[in-house]
Image (cartoon, rainbow, N blue to C red; front, side, top):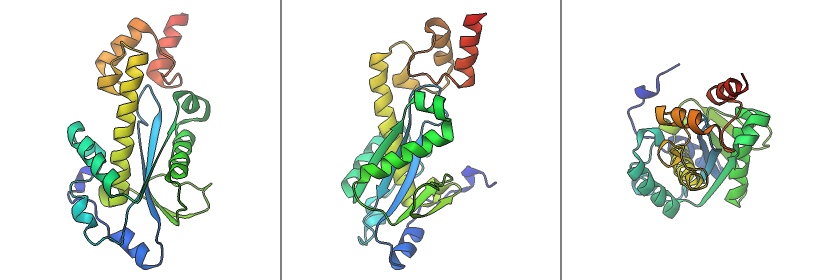
Length: 219
């Protein structure tokens, strides 16, 4: 597998333009955020870009894989994407759904909800790794798609920013875990808080660090 850091160029529109030229007018890029977190939902975003605009790449300059962008810049880029995109949909699957169904099925559920949130019919899906076989629409999944395809990169920014906002709100409901800073990921502070406070209702009980703590409580 090619390491992610081998992709130095910014994502482009070559694939979207080829599909558009072939007659696909509504193409959605999809990506998710939060799969590796210990707490909170997995959030997916779907983004349809106006491929008929010749200056689209210029207007979305700087949009790239959200993991390569610091938080303040992500916020700016998310606003830019919202101002440019034809349609944006966001969907989530809760920690309980992840525990009950598993991470991959829950991620696909979040993606289907994001597609529903677009409010328009889509002809082709571009995804980062994960296919949606239950969706009867043309689609392709690309390794490192968020680093290569602009619509997927835009979706990765929207998904990450949307989830960060949600985790900050959750921090107000379940304080003490540092969700406003760690966004539910497994930092040392988060681990310490888990030992002090125990898991919250938004923790993923099936994840090893949380499950291990619950096991220790029973012994």
